[in-house]
Image (cartoon, rainbow, N blue to C red; front, side, top):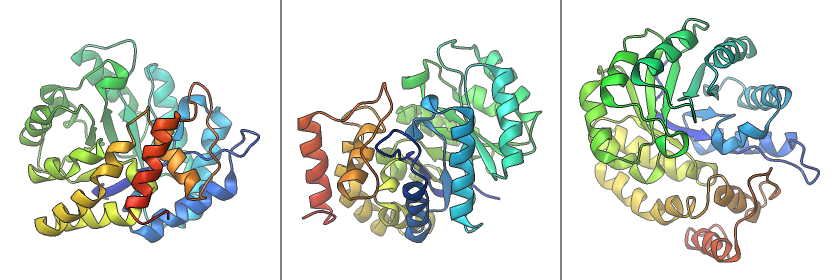
Length: 293
């Protein structure tokens, strides 16, 4: 199985009582599949996973698998700063039936490069599933440099990286350093096309929650070498890609989905609704895309 193309980092919709909204979640999943995305990523940061109980995480994954009906693969989030706990979670996700795992680097405790290698070795030993490393130093305080990633690529079931360092030089170095079959995915929507120009294979996307078809068109065109079409779609979507980070993710994208009537605008603390200025800008971006009047 290859993890290339667009993978949507799914939001977790809640109802007005703060519970997981099963109906809205499955509606969102089906919309993603119909929009042409290549895989789905439930229980990542965009899904407010740190606020979900273990039972709720299981529910989100099961509901996602049920709505997907085997049409595209599911890459479940399974990360944290306790290696033993993450390894146990990885094994559990395999039992649930997902096809792969996205595992963020340990946050707060800031392991050394050797600590990172041993962390991922321990997780990989507990599951046969393919694992994609998630590097997002702006949130974790821990960066996976290209040399460390090259070592991780030697672990048989570590198959790729979601690169969200925001450092284009590092991203180029990663593409130059890792083996040809190691999948490099962007963790920033706006940097997807530049990364693909140097060897990246797609994106794990926030924007595709709202515009799955547009993100799929852009990435598919780039994978086929149709750079003119990819650039045109990138230019059309760029303002919306950027507005998703006008406040902390997933605040803007969840607000956008609510404006479109696709879920309730309910967050779990410490996430809160966007401020008035941000809300106005989010709405304007949807108007510009022709999704709101």
